[in-house]
Amino acid sequence: MPLSSDSLAKLDERAQDKLDILLFRFAKLQDLLGSKIFRTLLSYSGFDTDVAFVEILAELERAGLMEADRWLALRDARNAVAHEYPGETDHIIRELNFIYEEVEYLIALAKRLEEYYNAIKSKRAARD
Image (cartoon, rainbow, N blue to C red; front, top):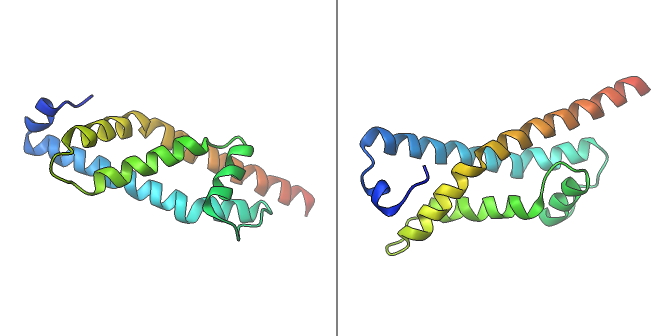
């Protein structure tokens, strides 16, 4: 990494498998966070989650947990690599490189969300 057109074409089967695993796990983590964890966590914190997803992202951003624009860029990258279209190799390579660069951000985001949950849980326990 980073990939280029030439290096992508020269990947052996094992390297291709690793790339596929990275993309699969990245997509699963992003789907889990976006479809389940964000709303559940905000609901647990008392935020009304019966709102558009952009409002969920905005609230998470206000809480200092994430950057909404960065999340949307990651979602766009995931969508781009989920479907391969002829003639879009350079675009796909850019998105693959972006995803690879952002893996640590997603891991850090998941940890921040867990810490936020634990802080809410502790406050609730102290009140009870």
